[in-house]
Amino acid sequence: EVQLVESGGGLVQPGGSLRLSCAASRFIFTTYAMSWVRQAPGKGLEWVSAISGSGGGTYYADSVKGRFTISRDNSKNTLFLQMNSLRVEDTAVYYCAKVMASTGAVFDAFHIWGQGTKVTVSS
Amino acid sequence: DIVMTQSPDSLAVSLGERATISCKSSQSVLYSSNNKNYLGWYQQKPGQPPKLLIYWASTRESGVPDRFSGSGSGTDFTLTISSLQAEDVAVYYCQQYYSSPHTFGQGTKLEIK
Image (cartoon, rainbow over all chains, first blue to last red; front, side, top):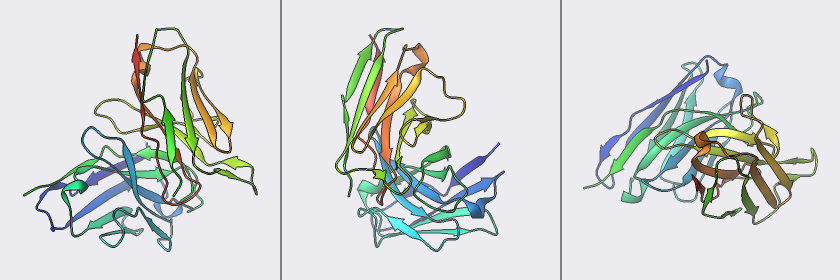
């Protein structure tokens, strides 16, 4: 069974940094684009960032552009989200998600989701 | 950015009755070269990650009961649950993946009347 397991969340002060990881298993990681989606407490889903299968294409929501960096290590089947200059409004559960098709392209539905990792930004 | 607007925000339907959720996009998500609508529907139950129900606007994901169906094209889409079951209580989201950012609708909370 395809599996995504996020880690790296926690409590951080405003202005601080965190690096989230998403360990993927039981599929050919390099052939699938991946994304990060977040959900603030009691709120809806917000797409954050996406990366192509090769890692050559990256995309960001305006709310995180310039502060967050998505990357992947295809040799270790792991997706990352480096989050800098964190703000209170970045507090959320962060999910990683795998797209449906093994084309490497990001323009696709989110087929498999991880269970999420909680990020709290507070002083 | 493409804005996705769902209606209603919440919905109460009796068991066995039909539930209908609308999703409108601020611009077309139909890609003319392949005639596909880049629109998905997700179900999220409390404490769980979202689950993909429908992709390409009308293709049911494997394992999703056939009471769930998606329709529409261009800018207007609908998720229909033909006969509501107790386990369908959840929040439902539409999402466009036609262009970045891959925006979600605000969600529709479905409850039992």
